[in-house]
Length: 268
Image (cartoon, rainbow, N blue to C red; front, side, top):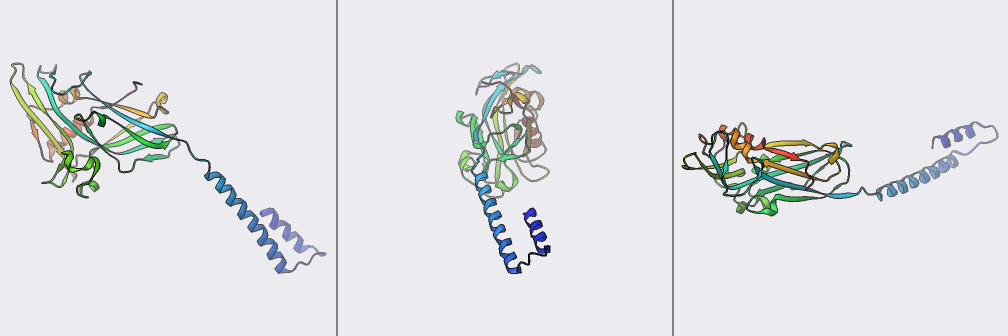
C-alpha cells in the first residue's frame, strides 16, 4: 500500500499526466478493496490453524506416614505413641488454573471438585480440552470462594445433599475430617473438624501453587499426595478435638491441612 501511494504521488507530479481526481480516487479505492480482501483471506486461513488440545488428569493419593491410607485403620504417631483412626475425609479443590511456559493460561469453568474418600471416583478427575503446550505451573484453591458461598446452594459437587453445606451459616464446609485417637493405654477419644467460613479474618479458603519440573511439563497430569500423618504430627488434636465453627482454631486446621499437599513425580 505504501509503495502504491508513492507511485500515485509521482504520477500526479509528472507533466505528461494530469489524472482527474475522481480517477485517482477510484484507483485508490480499488487497491484498498484488493488489500482488504487479501487480509480477510489471511485471517480465515489463520483461524483454521487450531491449537492441539489434550486432557489433563488430577490424581489424589492419601497416605499416613508414607503408607497407603485406609479408613478405620489405626496409625501410630511416633511423637507420643498415640494411634489415629480416620472415619471420614471430604474437601473441596476449586478454581483450577494451568499456566503455560508462553505465559498463557487455562482456567476451568465451574471449577468445583469434592474429594470424598467414600467415593473412589472422586480421587481422580479430568480437565477436558486444555491447550497442548508446555506447562509451567498449576494453581488451585482448597475450599470454596466467598462469591460462591454467598450465591446460595448450587448443584453438582456443590449440591447440599453432598453433606458439605451449612444451612445454619449459609456457606460451604471446605474440609470435613472425623475419627478417633487412642492413647498408649488404649483409651479412645473422638475428633471432628468441620472447617468453613469465608469472611476475614476467618476465611478458610487456601491457595496452592506448584511449579512443574522440566521432565513433567508435557506430562498432562498431576499426582497430589496428602500424608495425613504430617497433619497430626503438627496439630494439637488432643486440645482441639472438636472444631465446628469459623475461628482461630479452624484457621489452624486449614493451614495444617494445606501444608500436607505435595506433588509426586511418580509416573504411576
